[in-house]
Every structure is written in structure tokens, then in C-alpha cells.
Amino acid sequence: MSSTIEIAPSRERSPLALIHEGPVDLDMLEEFRAAMATDGLEVEIRSGMSVRASAWSWLAPTAVLLWISKSYFDGLLKELGKAHASILDKALRQLGRRLSGLKYWEVTAKKVVAIADRYSPILSVWTERHEGGRFKMLIASDLEGAALDSALSAYITFVQAYHTGALDPEDLAILAEARPVGDITLLAYDQHSGTIQLVDPLEARLA
Image 1 (tube, rainbow, N blue to C red):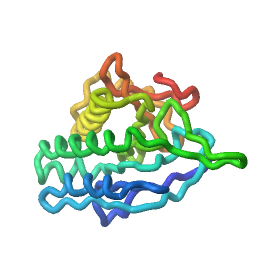
Image 2 (image 1 turned 90 degrees about the vertical axis):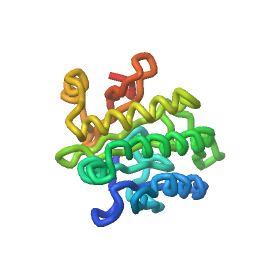
Image 3 (image 1 turned 135 degrees about the horizontal axis):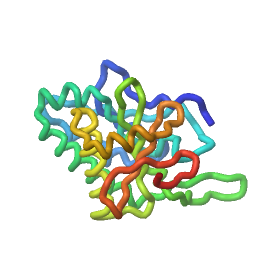
Image 4 (image 1 turned 45 degrees about the horizontal axis):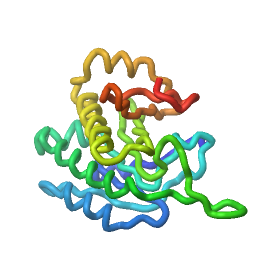
């Protein structure tokens, strides 16, 4: 497994970034950027990631990932108003629906095959934590439509509460039990409870 996964944009650039690898329809990414263009906010779009295959696929970057730095919550939301998070929520849900029907293909020695995994290799959301750690939201491959919308909305609500000190005690207790790999804490949406939950990095299941 690679020791570093450098996906964050430059500190001087936007606190939001879409980072992609492989043949991705850039119109989808530009639609997201246009939707977020409020009060001069510029979403960085760039290609390429500094890491390749990981021994654990759910730790690796996906074909498209959204990076959200803590400065978005600590700074921009104070300037633009907390309601701006609802714009991010809506734009992310639209992007998620556009990407949900895509397949990720892997070239092997014998043939090209579609990757089938519990979690999507197409889209993930990474968010900077306090003290330099990171959340990675894994998106279940079978989520689509309203269920996918609910998952993405729940995550934005979760990280906004995390960065504004508004998490419920139950959520804080869950995070206290996290088992990060390096600086990455894995999260996913649990459809039964409608909440964001930890993912066990060793067993790839909801903890």
C-alpha cells in the first residue's frame, strides 16, 4: 500500500477541488463548478493523483473525488453564510447522479473488465479534519437516485456539524472509536439508520 495519498489542492487555491483521473466527461465537473460559483468562489478542477494502486482499494482515490478543506467550513461559510452549504449539497447531489451510472474499467493482461466493488471506484468525497487528518466518504456502489441523494446530503450535514462543533455526543463517541489508516478515517452512509457511520478499514464493512 502506498504510504502517502496527496490529493489536497494547493493552500493558496480554492478550498474546494474536483480531482479526476482517466476519461471523465469534463462537462459534468464544469457544471459543478458553475453551480458553486457564488460570491466569487472558484472550484479548482485538476487531473492526476500522486498515488496509484492501493492494497486496499477503498483507501485509494476514485476516478473523481471532491476535496473539501477545513477552510471552507472555518472561513468561507462565515463569509458566505451557513446556507451556502446547501448549495454545495445540491451541486454534489447533481454530480453524484451524473456519475452514478458510469462503470470503471480495469485493463488486465487478458481483457478489459468492469470493476465490481462494494464501494464506488467512480466518486468519493474527501474532507480535511482537525489536526491534519482526513475523512474519506465511501459511496456504496448500489446507491442511486433518492438513496444516493440522501447519502451525500447526510455527509455534508455531518462534516458541517463536525467543523462547526455541532456534532451530537453520539457522533463524537463514534469518531472516538475510529481506526484511521495513516491519516484517513473511512466513513459511509448507513441506509437503515440514515446516518454516517465508520467503516472498518480491515474488514471493509460498517463498524
